[in-house]
Image (cartoon, rainbow, N blue to C red; front, top):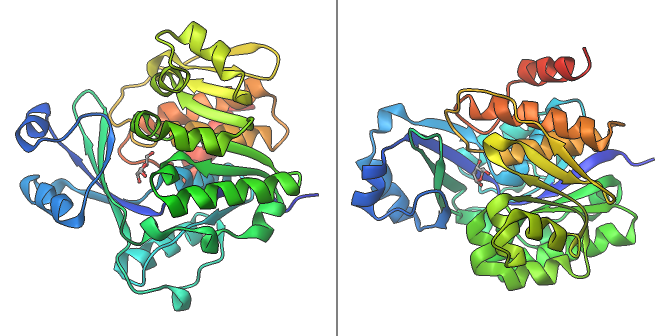
Length: 331
Ligand SMILES: OC[C@H]1O[C@H](O)[C@H](O)[C@@H]1O
């Protein structure tokens, strides 16, 4: 019997989220729709141009968002991450504690440095564009990986953003090895099309012969498999993962359960902010499959939860919202 449903590894970032226009991207040389790594100076100068009074500050980080979702739906989760001994680092620790996620870091053990920040810019079409200053999370390494938590989990969940650094990639490989040696299943998310575009070779190394579960959106699936249509991409994906999920935004998702494809219906909503929608899908799905739900039922939960996320600002649900969604799944 494993103690945790899911242990995650990934970046710890505090999101600072603003509404912007396409014109702002044009005038400031920002590439829309992607996550771009920037230094703190560039991040600050962009924030100075934006109207700071409308900012929303919230704990984020892709895998962290998913791990918090597991906990909010009632699962047991653990997160491996790195923040600094600064105001945002303490804010982040408090957030994970309040979210019911088990962690190894305590305030007394935080190192000096700057906690990572993600400038999330949301346009009227609800698309999220991120300029991320990694700060101390760029040093995330095997030292931050909690071996015993991985061994005591049903799933290890690996954030794809870690492929950008040698130490991040090493931590991915190490965690996967620990998981495989302990009978813990390995789930990986590509995180962002830019990661697949620029770091495909690193993903090849991490995936190795295959992983148990892979999360991708349509663009990532096509980029990774070098196919220009989803029908071929999904067939090709079978080579890399025993099970996988391809999210398709307002068209729902498709799940490969190891045998057949399951179509997951979208839930209609007024889209405000797509930040964290994929993370929520992954977190809710992982909660489902580790808590006795079928793939179809877990996909339905994930679809309901991610549609709720896009209907509001920020990547996370409130506790009562998670409970309400779960109640709608099992009326
Ligand atoms: O996937 C969304 C998340 O990615 C980035 O890591 C941001 O922190 C944001 O919360």
